[in-house]
Length: 167
Image 1 (cartoon, rainbow, N blue to C red):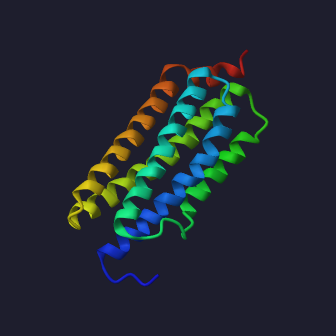
Image 2 (cartoon, one colour):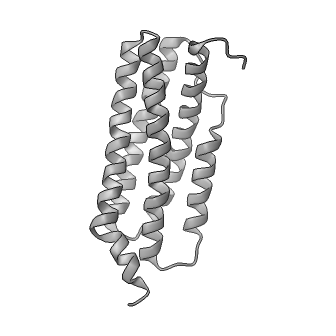
């Protein structure tokens, strides 16, 4: 696509995010299934439901813009998901896999936080306050998911991974 202005860039960035979220809808159930720790399983499962909501919000924004949602592959998320897949295939102690899953999950969250912050700003600049508010809601949920993963890592999972080799 030839991008002539901020509106064109905004639509392209939204398409990138849409594809990223669709990739996560497929990856999160696999991560939840692989996780040993119940709270980690729950974190991935609950974020899956939020992610489905993120897809719906993006679809609403595209509808309002009169644009098609798909048509772009988010290569960044593709790489993050592929790294997560490699982690899940490792021959490692379950506690270590859980720590690695948190790392993979946070990589995805941090990418999304950066991307949603950008498109939210574009929406504001373009005068679309409704979209900006929807994107801010998603940004808030992504931040909360990242915080939850940090709490799980710090409260128990990383410590369990540290002591797994000594068990």
